[in-house]
Length: 471
Image (cartoon, rainbow, N blue to C red; front, side, top):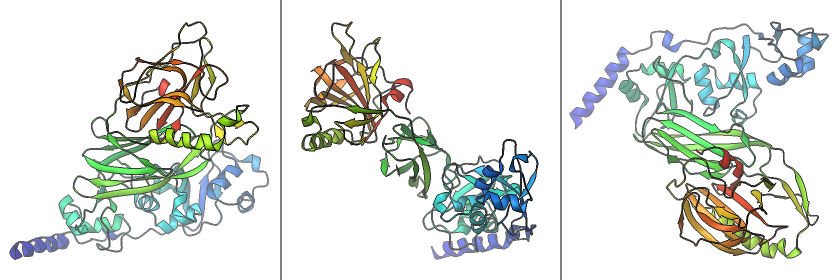
């Protein structure tokens, strides 16, 4: 064993000797002129450019001796004030999902201090997905790179030997002080013409990271995807909700999570972390923007007892808890079917509309879609929209006769105000199976079916599930 270790270190020393830097591996930053300029693009305004570079438009006009902001033309060169010792032509590029200030620094061969200066950053968290990042034009010419990460107990030199890479190339390309101080999971970039660029904060085994929709939308179902060429463990969270990933197809991990309809517009964290099959840990955190949707504000008069907190809060706790478990199997396939036969009257209310009850503030929202009662039919039957298992079937004060079905992987559907329930808890139902009859039980103004869809413990717009296939 001692002889083996001696030979191992002799091999490492020999490798280091052969691969010593020859000058270009430790290349210094080229000196650049002190002024930075931006080339005006078609459709640019002085205000837009000032906003993009974080400078007052008055300063931008003064430095460039612009008396009439309306006379900008495509191709004009504007000096950007307040950015010294960077120089060259500046451009903007959107920050992709899966990047951090460290990975962007390594990808564009810029120091983190330069990125902070160019973008007037006060916190790395400002580099959210979709952020308009200011960089020198020549930095935008990305080379293809391989993304390598250290395993537990592995040194940078051992990683270099295993990949046939000059260890000093790691140092030069990643802004390191030396071959020491790199922690397990730190993603390092090295030029590789055969690679496909992917999320810079994640190792090369993860070829792509995607979130749909982006930006996020109030009340919609979010799909988070990781593409990989090997098995791994992965977890995470979105807006504080735990992400439950499952394998979907070959080399793909997917999580489905709802964005609450009352989520305020702004930036919220996406966290993804896990471990590759070889024990290499990975993880990153990045802010994602949530956009608002337009909803109607509706004032309703209802019996006082149906909005009494002593009644509504215990019922809400029971109902909400039903949609929290995450069963490991996906029971549904394709697009969810309509739970009722086509009706000429359509919907009486849609998801997300803000509600006021008996003059209260508009602190409530409609948690599903309401199918109107078809008076042309003798019986308005309710059909299961997809395969699943019944987890609740019974009467509630506000929701009336209600049923909830578990479709697996944190996806649930609920059916409220039924005249009659035709299933029991534990029943396995198939798409198209009759589960009840439309009625007017509970807090209603007339007979209808209220349909809810839950994703990751959050109510989402059912129309998405009736119009497209998830994931």
